[in-house]
Amino acid sequence: MKSPASALGEAVGHLVEEAVRKVITDIITPYGLSMGVHRQKISDKVGIKFEIDIPILEGNKIIALIDVKYLRYKKHARDKGSWVVVAHNRLKASYPEIKRRLVILVGPGWTEEAKRMISTSCIDVISVEPELLDSVLSEFGIRFTWDEKDMEIPRISWENFQRLSSDDLERIKERIIEKSEIKEKLMLWFKQHIFCEDPEEKLSLTYICPEAEKTQKLDEFISGREQDFP
Image (cartoon, rainbow, N blue to C red; front, side, top):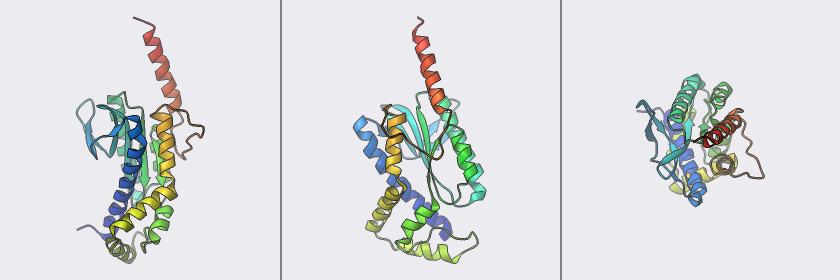
């Protein structure tokens, strides 16, 4: 049986993921794109499978990878962050049509070091800060952050969470999206990197790969040169 802390963290992580999926659906549908199977297992070129929360498809081609990753304890940040990097980089190497990769980090366990490790591997990061989640959930009588050794707060919070109605859960998802500005960040991310538009307002994330644009321009240059030769 899961501890109240683990159960609550997993439940809140699922709420954020559901909210993100709804936002992405609204963004990509007018462009004829779709989401792959939820938590789809995708094989790299040697047959190793990696589970991706939200693959973005253009027809049958995977053109973007998006993951929503929840983490409670900082001691696991390096290992979980490394696994994200390995999965995304191996799939990018196996599917060159993938234009961009994004991870939405949720929970108090994500350290600044882990965020930098992911972002400097050319994976974009949107971070939902624990203070924001605490602020939203406190409106419903739930605390989301506590001392690692505290057993009472997570127990009470999990009990209160289980009493929430379906309407309450929808309101929590709406509040998280609103207060975190995830919708606006995702819209700009898709416009700049997937739809190849050039919005007047540039995407500004705390963590974003500084070499990504250089790599894209180099790829475009090489592709153009190849077309010059029969």
